[in-house]
Image 1 (cartoon, rainbow, N blue to C red):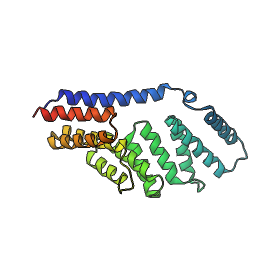
Image 2 (image 1 turned 45 degrees about the vertical axis):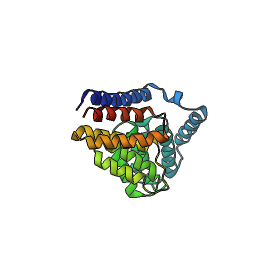
Image 3 (image 1 turned 180 degrees about the vertical axis):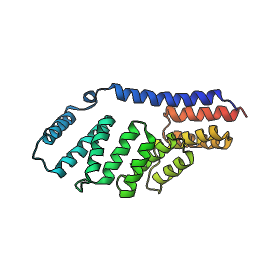
Image 4 (image 1 turned 30 degrees about the vertical axis):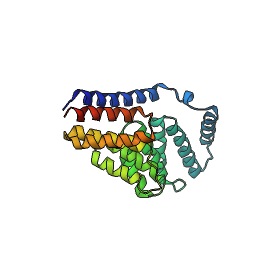
Length: 225
């Protein structure tokens, strides 16, 4: 089996992830927010500074701010706020939502083990709240943790039913997972499956560089046998 293209491909995936994470860290929060969003943060901070603010209102505001921070890549500050909300045990906010956003924060920080924990807690508390997004993040987190069989099972659950459209995330995650399983298990069957999934994805997303790369790598490996 040719190991050089496999290793180059894996290193390429890691490099892309590192570059993405570095871009998030290097971009000031204010540069990633529209003025209206910055104004909303300022308004929340102003209300939070009031001495007379009711406790339930305070926790709701912290959640609102944390959600904005997560959406704009400020994961550390968001996680701090969300943990503060959880510690109060307030009934003013949905605990499943708080855990979901904690999962998103750790997912964004590439701390996938922590992400899986919070996302799983979110599901236990409310199986319906933002279920599709949550299952997608669990599937990708399991993949990143090298839990390939559970990752495929989670991905299958996320896209269960004919009403759920298989998007680029599905094809890319499934193809990458089978590819890694082929490398880990030294099995051509997994490479064949990876290429099949990549080809299906390319029919719908013909300009996908990631799917094309996976297909080409699998083709090289299978062609060498």
